[in-house]
Image (cartoon, rainbow, N blue to C red):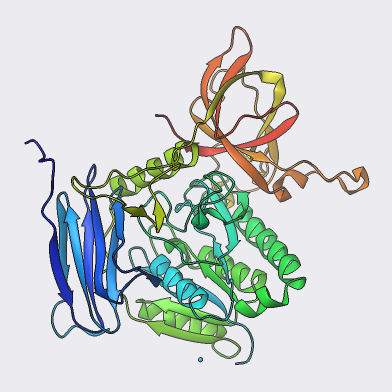
Length: 456
């Protein structure tokens, strides 16, 4: 079936306190224009008369408090208004931990809270923390990160779930002013190395404390922490594993409010454990939450990594002109990554612990690990089975200049300054080809490999 050169727009009138939910199919896009009234996407306000483009299987909703009219121009869009009759707290700055099971809408809650904060007119820039390594945040899947949000988080694509970072996108765009701080976990499953997760969460908390200690306004704006579903429930998510990482978050980010999304048992658990000293609130799961399967999540990971290196321009539907992408014009959104051949010796690569490691409880009685879960192990690119081909590598910040402070696991406490992908290995000539978002020397750099791969 051939697409026509123009697409017929349709208008929808939304009553007060209602929303229009939609899903964009793979390979399609849609443009939504606020014709009149006021409306928002996860708390980010729409500008009247300006088309907003959505793509890459984006799932979102247009909400209005006072009523509005929207116009849509689309290819293959599924959507429907909310069914009629469906229903919709200290002087300390809020430090909110959001917990909930898979497909409960935790990230949506985070975005709404952040967007309302930056729209309040108080000049607030709340700190948004992402400790879900499967989500990608401002970087690529496998990272734990945080960023101060000073403007509305745009929603137009799954490739940028929390907005774009200035380090990997055109800095001329207002929405790309984010400067995240990240650590590399290297896996999308929190159970892969829970000791490393615990340490990185606490590292992230110390960084935020240091930053907010010199920023009274930032401290007043508060902290909002998005968590993975394994903190609530799921296959293999033992109570001990969950409680340990939840406690790490509460301690590291000095949490004073816990929001539990749509999970009564978890709410009771949190009330018993922390209700005496923290505010624990259960909020209902939105009726608009979409169930996401594994294949969809894998496609989203691909979108996110591709976007990190190449940027993303969503082609608007036929006939739509002067559209915006996340509130920005559709210009200068493409990147020009660099593909460079480097010597094996130019880059020092490490893996944390063994590539596959059984839990301590599975070891024979009296047996001890040969490799610690937290031990950096050097990776030799010339050895078969190195796992480097198509691997995502995190390039780390330089070691501390004071040699007196060096310690065995210092590499675990170095933050990430960027990501590259190994696209080719030439063992005979001891060279490898590296794809990087920008040109720059990797000589003398240190990198970490995890279990995540990507290829075009």
